[in-house]
Amino acid sequence: MITVRFFAGAAQAAGVDSARVPATANQTLREIAQAASKNDLASILEVSSFLVDGALADGDTPLGESATNGQLDVLPPFAGG
Image (cartoon, rainbow, N blue to C red):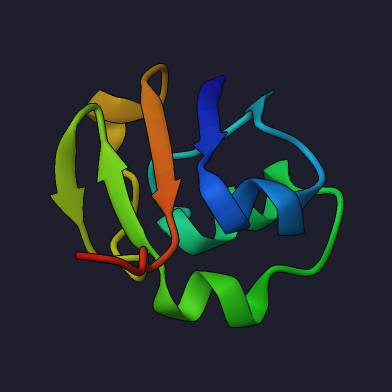
């Protein structure tokens, strides 16, 4: 199980702030984030940043074995100065 946390507009679009979902090492970060959401997030996930256990990663990257019990953060673009 991995904890997926959504921030700002991603949380609003997902319909949840966080969720624990089963994850395998070969799933991409986008696939895991979508599985944790109550809604279709395709457009949000295309422009979001992903952190796996605090490290920046590309959304098309497979989760990897070491992070299957970790944390995935989904951060949409932020506006402002």
